[in-house]
Length: 115
Image (cartoon, rainbow, N blue to C red; front, top):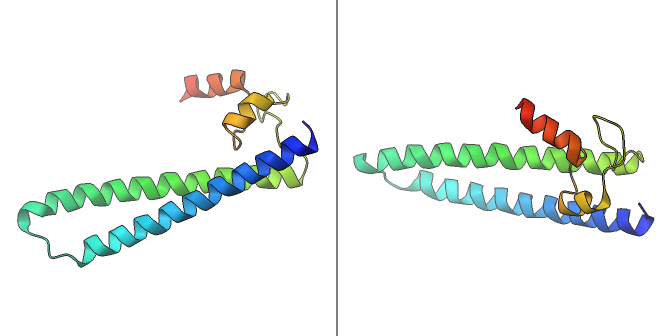
């Protein structure tokens, strides 16, 4: 992987990270609006469902930020792009598609089988 490739991937990760923060900020604003509304009894179930959805989205987005931060840390330590399982290089094509990935395509398939 060239320095140009690495820089392009870093910029992509930073953009994704910013988009997630924006999404979380918007989600929090929506949650505040929902919390301020007077809820009718028939809306209570809908509010409970939305609360669950917001919690799931919040957790998923925070997990994505952690994955991105790990990838950025690996870039700084020159270990970015190496599969955590087999320790072989992850293809540039895969990194272009999933810049925060920790596994090559083969090992990612094994991970999915396990989970």
